[in-house]
Length: 308
Image (cartoon, rainbow, N blue to C red):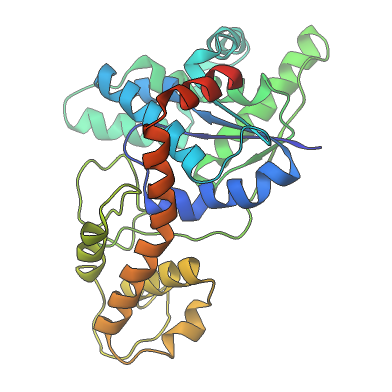
């Protein structure tokens, strides 16, 4: 079986975007069709300013939510990055193969460093080197495929380059992984800013639906979602991004098609109501399972211990 490695970073509470865009597929498809490893990459959360206690809480919460979403330890491996020493050990070895120039060309580093510089500050050194840690995450397990979005493809290419370079210099050791496009999944955008992804790192925002939001909170956020000028309900990602986002969320929750769903509505209000209820129903079983797991912390600890 193909070995697949995927991770989630505990920099914030997991969102509807995390679930519809990745976690649901991990549970429904990947754990059944591949030798799948799912990791809470808590070391990556240390590359930015953080509260250590919060990182620990979010790491535990993320692991619990992965299980609540349907990941089965009998079918896949669920673990926390810092529980496996080889990640940090291999990262140092790969830093001895990587170059400073490669690190500084990473788009995310350039963007974040420039933003911090404008504020008069400086980023952590680990932000510069964390793509090597990501490469170590992948190469340590000889993963053949890494399903990533376009924003992470550059990092997988770096992992490939480091694997080839290491193999040439020290002898064949690592599988050279390839980036794969995740299966068709929802693209969930911020409800208040449909040009931006619904990101968990945004600490505040009525545009973000968190997986543990209460039903009434979910309804309030969806009902207040930004829409577009005009009254006709049509699906047009470019011209009507706010409306398209709602239709895509509704489609992802109900198994429909955004274009077909758009013809069922004559008002934004009705679309928002149905979308809100669809999201509440999608999250209900996950939230119920999360509550059960929280009542049995020993089970989650055992899963993570065995996974490590």
